[in-house]
Each structure stands twice: as C-alpha cells, then as structure tokens.
Length: 101
Image (cartoon, rainbow, N blue to C red; front, side, top):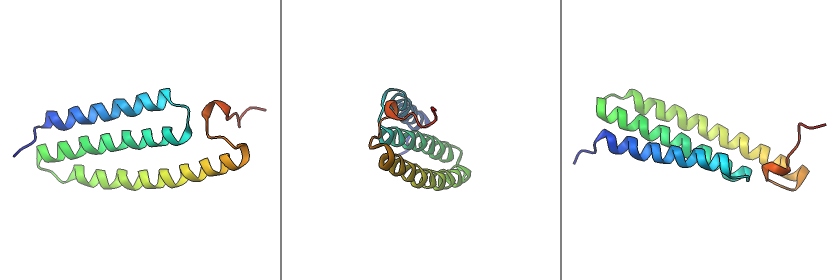
C-alpha cells in the first residue's frame, strides 16, 4: 500500500499550523517548547514524505540532523526554564520581564 505525497504533506501542514498557533496563543514556556517540537516533527514528516516520493535517502539524513538539533534544543530550553523558574517562580511568558531594567 503506497501513501501518496499529498497525505504526508497534509498531515505535515496540519501539525505545523497547530504548532504555530500554539506558539502564538499559549503563554506557558513549556507548552511553547512543545509546540516548537511539534513544528520540527512536522518538518521531519515532510522530509520523510519527499524522501519516500523521490526514493532518495537525503530526506532521512536531514531528519536525523533535525532530531539531533531538536534534542539539543530541548536540553538547553529545559535548563533555561528550570533556571528561570528558580529565580522567578513562574513559567508564564507574560510574567517574565528579564530584559527590562
């Protein structure tokens, strides 16, 4: 059974749109990080769809690179969230004004 490229791209666009909406609407830093991860996974799904369609391995190699960058982003992002939570006792973006004097 062959899955058409349009199905891959449809699900990918839907996931990416949900991630963008989540980043723009939500105010919790942890939820924003999860939405960024959802957007990265949507791009990975598009890469896999194109790799399957064109019968190439390049898309799968990009997926491994994006997964590596995403793992590093999660580690750094969670470390920053923990450090900010220890100082400010909140993880809401509206309450964080660290760059203001």
